[in-house]
Length: 376
Image 1 (cartoon, rainbow, N blue to C red):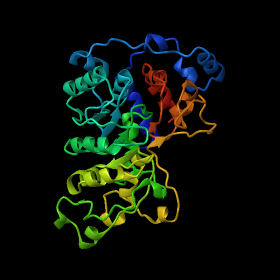
Image 2 (image 1 turned 180 degrees about the vertical axis):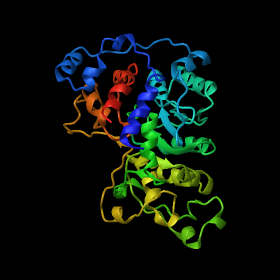
Image 3 (image 1 turned 45 degrees about the horizontal axis):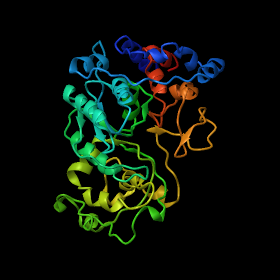
């Protein structure tokens, strides 16, 4: 789709996508922040808004009223599946669902075991009220080192593999913000032409246990070994690491769920080390012998090179682009100061917006769609 046509399509949808402004943010003039009015942004940051937790209705009628656009949306070339691990800030999660909602899109939530009962009830209500929302039954104790992160994602992949209509799947975390509309997201993913979008870099030796066996037979990788060649059955993984976030083709997800069984591999990777969640997808992506759909060559990682990706934008400690100057685990926590440049960034997801106010402003009242589309 051309830039002009994409902008026209977004503008046509603007009247059907309206986000409810919270009283706490109603005074904020979104257009001035989008235009990078530095004096105005400085004024707003001097008196930062805190969102008050509300007792909101969770009936199906109310949920549909808040989430489903009032006008019929134009069809997508293909739907997008969202696999998101969540644990807190339900209203933020609902805002994210609303911003990406389309009948062709599907959404899976894997709830961390640490989440409280009220949060669990709210997430389960979404699955009850929307046919394109599912929630995994399994609960894992996920930590900042990444333990059980990929176990949780795998449960979502199993549920989403049989859902019809979607072409790509996004791996997401609790405080990720979609910074592209549903139409922009599909237009970007369509350009991949079936390739997976995975961040790849060499994997440090301490990220996996070298005493374990990593060949297909030892991992009991293939569900039906008759579908694998002798070379594949005897082949071993090529290790890499990268971001947890990724955009996976439907064919790749089908392979991960229906052709192979990742259970043993997940358990063997779940060692007492930091960042173990960053190994699974990059390793599968460059393990040429197993030929996962959408993979690419291992030559770059073997040469010590890093492959970037378009799925996620994140800023690490010391990066001057982080206008909020706030970091958690060395990752920028975006503030209202980052709103303008994030709205123009070419990537799909921003990680991480720990301040729900930013999400509220990104979702504003439809003006955001209009303003962004003018720049396309």
